[in-house]
Every structure is written in structure tokens, then in C-alpha cells.
Image (cartoon, rainbow over all chains, first blue to last red):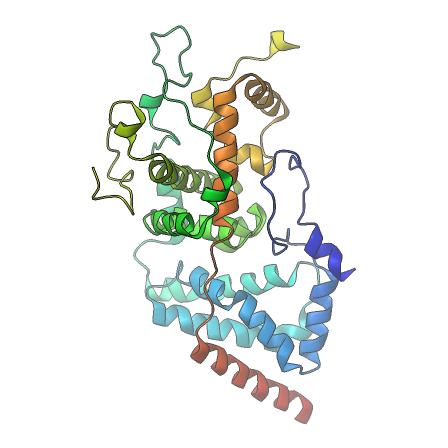
Length: 263
Length: 87
């Protein structure tokens, strides 16, 4: 019963054949699990190791989520500590209607929100997420597609190439991805970290960040598209070396974190 | 069937990849998406790139909680636990 949750991260309507391989079992869909029940029982029993596991699993993420609501890191740290204490004090009331993770982050979000209102964070995360979602940002440079006057408008003019999988997954390339993520606008960066680095489900992200499912998907899509573009520049050289006109710079986002200085 | 399915341009497809992976396309959109990649090696390559991006991103390491903050929490746990068994 415990292993089930680990092995099957909620494939609901996903296309199993088309899904990226799931590389770890951390993703859940918000449903309670036997593992959750065991953890809660151990914590109620006073087993420190059970609490420590929980802290190790979610502590850093909680800090990151809290920072979306409050003004500075110090406030976020306080909110996280408060949330953990609230978790302990409320552990007897945890009823497994949701997963432990969802419950945990709900407690955190509530506290962070209250604190954020008091601190008057200049721009709430939901507003930021909305603004980043509205801006018109194509996934791929429009210059790479044929124009409206061609026989097949919107077809690839400069098509993507097949990438060598082993090179993409090499440590050096992962550094390029990390840098590309660091350069993303805040909301996109946070969503891609939760979804793709930590393996959260769309529902968990929408829930914890209090944004809509559609909004988190738009942000994720932009984030992934930019990471792909940075990776393409890295793997295939700068655009002009691929035998096509240099791409129009789009607000500096196409700059390559590694080869930025190379011509 | 194809009579009812408007063709999807490559430029349109690249905007739908995340929704496709998430399983949140409508049935007709998904049908058009699949029909397109079946006949388009470029978009097949694009979707494969996105898949690799996701897989590679998943290999990045997550941050760990700071040792100081962790120790504070464990201390709080001990206090909480002691209070419980005493009460």
C-alpha cells in the first residue's frame, strides 16, 4: 500500500505514451496515502525521525513558497517556522481528506498570506503570476516559422533538430538549464521549480500558489520554452551558426548564460 | 473524420505542448495535435526536445533546508513532544 503512491503519480488524463518519463515518485495529486497515515501516526507518537523526514522533504520548498507572499527572506523563515509549529499543534486534527503535503502547504499559505498582507508586499504573487501570464511571449521565435504569405503559413522555416539524449542529460548541460531557470521572471521560475524540479502536480502548484490551473500552465509553458531555447543555443551554437539570420532579440531573454560572450 | 479536424500549424502546436503533456487539451485539440505530429518530423523533434528539457530539469537537485533552521525545528519538535507526553 505504501509503495503504490510512490510508483503511480496520478496519471489521470495524461497520455502515458506521450508523457515525459517520470523520474521520481515524489509527485502526488493531493490524495492522501498510506504513507501519509504512517508518517502522521509516527509524529503523533513523538518519533522525531518522522518529523525530520518531513522537514527534509518539504522545508526548503516551504521557504520558497513563503517568499512568494512576504516581503523578505527573514519574514519567510518566520512564517515557515510558525507553519511547522501549527502543523505539530494541529496534527491530531489531520483527517486525511487531503494529502499531508497539501495540508502542510495550505497551513503555510494561510499564514504567509496573513503575514504578507500585514507587511504589504509590494506585489502579491497572484498579481505577478497574472501579469507574467498575460504578456505576449511566443514559445518559439516567430521568425522561425513561415509567414502568412507562404503556401504553408506557420510551418517551420528553421526547424528544430534532434538532440543527443546523453548530452542533454550530462552534468554540464544541467548547469545551462540551472542558469536559464535563474534568469526567468520570478513567477515562471517558481512554477518550473515546483513542477519540473520537484515534480509537483498541476493541482498542487495551483493550490499552493493560489493561482488558477490555467495560469500555472501558461507560466510553466513559458518557462520550459525559454529553457528549451537556451539549451538549443547551447547544444547547437548561436543561432547564426545554424545557417539562419540572427534572431531578433526579445528583451534580452535569448542571451546564452554560458556562451553569452562568444560570437 | 479529418473533414472536421482543422489542421494545426507548427507555430500553433509549439504553444500546446505543455497542455498536451498535462493532459489538459480538449479531445479535438488532442486529436489535431497527434495527427500533426504523426505527419511532421519537425514537430516530433520539437516535442522530443521539450520532453528532454523536462527530464533534464528533473535531474536538478533541490535545495536542502539550512542546518540551523532544521535544528531549530527539531528542537521545537522535542519541546512539543515533551509537552504532549507530560500533558
